[in-house]
Structures are given as structure tokens and as C-alpha cells.
Image 1 (cartoon, rainbow, N blue to C red):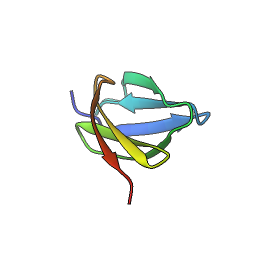
Image 2: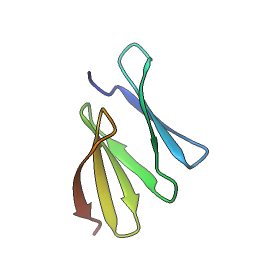
Image 3: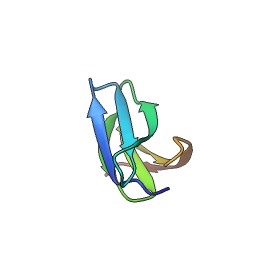
Length: 66
């Protein structure tokens, strides 16, 4: 299922939506900051690290912010 939109709510959670506006997944990001998304991934920055999640909310990668 593709990610069509991502909304950060109350600065603590991000909500992933599909093309029909249905919620796919909610991810708790607590101290993180949403920095972007594609149709298959969501990127959240935690300090100097960027965590990459898939549409199921599973962390699939990490990178460092520049």
C-alpha cells in the first residue's frame, strides 16, 4: 500500500494515509521531527540521525543528517 500523505499531530505522532485518505499506520516519534516522505518511506530526524520507516511503521534504515 502506498503512502499518499503524512501528517504530524501534536509533535509526538505521525499519521500515514493511503490514496483514499485512510490511515495506514500511526508512528510515535516523541522527540523526532518529520522531514519528508515518499510513496514507500517516511523520514524522521532524531538529533543527528535520520530514521527511515516503511508504510508498516517498521524502521528500515538509518542515515546521518548533514
